Image 1 (cartoon, protein in one colour):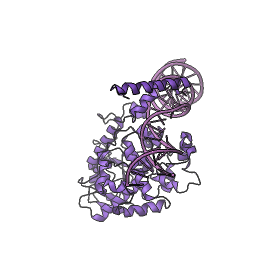
Image 2 (cartoon, chains in turn cyan, red, orange; image 1 turned 60 degrees about the vertical axis):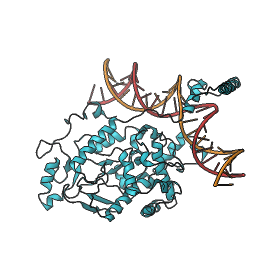
Image 3 (tube, protein in one colour; image 1 turned 60 degrees about the horizontal axis):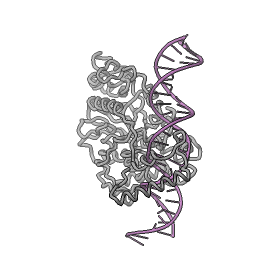
Image 4 (cartoon, helix red, strand yellow; image 1 turned 30 degrees about the horizontal axis):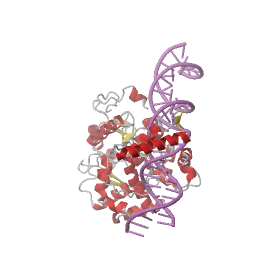
Length: 408
DNA sequence: ATACGCGCAAAAACCACAAGAGTTT
DNA sequence: GAAAACTCTTGTGGTTTTTGCGCGT
């Protein structure tokens, strides 16, 4: 996928590709200061931009975590990485799976990175919380919370988080047979609705669409539980949005008045549930009593998701704002250590991606292996074959009377 | 430097039907 | 509320086809 990777440029053991700080010329740069047009390491950035009020106002952005040579332009939520435009294009144009990754434009780092937390409000009511002590920081760093953040801030954080989760575009459990039995049609529907005129409210989904489902970091799950502290049961059984989610309700209704909020919720949980299996087919309602904390969300290869998840081509950069309705999830402000950890985790995750096929039903597998084929394709059973099969089944039944259980 | 063809590898598509899941009675 | 009957959807594997990439000319 990445030519740079193939060339070995991202060898974890070496940092030869990383740009060095324009100030000290020794450390690896971590931020790019637009005002100074300079790449700076954490230390120099702290020193320079803490020197004066004016300097502290310089807009800076993180350096791309992939190439480490250009200012990050987008935050990929699926990869949990800040990427420059070039790397973003490379990585996310590589395949349909990558194209589905949900990216948001990188916002400039406000104030000083290492000072007290600063809360910034942007249009649409989304919050950005700058600065962190590292304590209570989100593992993946999308949301940085300090321990001493007040309840209001946390609530707003929850709201953003909830919106991010809940506004996913649910793959429509379409009862229309014509659509379901035709993958191509489904794909067309999914892609086409991006700019299709008639599906007006769907575009909102696209903004927050299922890229989050690929967050198979354990952190993500833990985070959800930790923040909401709502028993899973309450989500699942009656589809009643927890009291705590009153804000969520308003958010959902804001975007999709005709959609049931429980639908979003079930979808969300369904995604997680399916992640532990194949990622295929999202349950229309989650009747399974699944405990999120017990789910191994990292088991299923991402590739499995590629088949049914809603997908959309990456919108033009200029359209991002148009199509990403509020709330926009703002990249957090991280300490250099957090950032380094993120980079390592990002690379590790890329390295460890699994694409093995997961068998959910051994019985189906066994049956498929015994079925007649024509050029590899399943073929209709002839009457004779059916008869033989019947006899075989009968034989098995007879055998079972002797205690031999057919095992699939 | 660019265009083209070739070989290889990986991914996608195709098929039928039992099993599973959901809905209705 | 539980059970049965019914309908609809999903998952399964071997082969072929398609797609993408690297390489040489």
